[in-house]
Image (tube, rainbow, N blue to C red; front, side):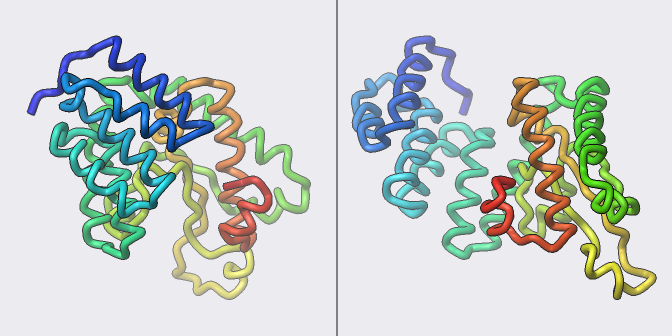
Length: 238
């Protein structure tokens, strides 16, 4: 099914709903009910309704609206991503992976059209990551000496097939600092991966991008030193 034509009035309406949702999701849902019949075929309306219902009633209530958005536009990557998380909450690993793989395919395709990931973009992210490492206390820098920070566009397919979020911003792989002491010689080396296309797509503003690269690098360094996700949240690195 082709995407509906752009309608400035509809986008203004969605902006109003999104602004209201920041303080009152219930009121935003009521405002969505006022959408005219001419807008009911737009997948963005159903995607936004699903997002609001997740906040107010949970993932099970949101699922049908994400599915409706996908029926209206099978290329709606955000709806596929949200539906994957609905399946994750329900414990349906197979369905989660199926939608995550579609997100990976659609996002990679959109990267080309949007020109995401130019050499200049990658140099900026690499420079910010390098600055973060240089600012670490010497004792931590020394322990990270054999842990490279590498850039990849998006997570590899095999990771997504295992259930890894295709829109993750970073990844720590390999033995952590404590595990390296007892790791077998054949163990995979430790490394930190920054997924530059995900970072650029999520944070088009340069200042926000710089901040998020810093948070992501520190987050993955935290994993290297044995911190879990609760620790990251407590430290503001989630």
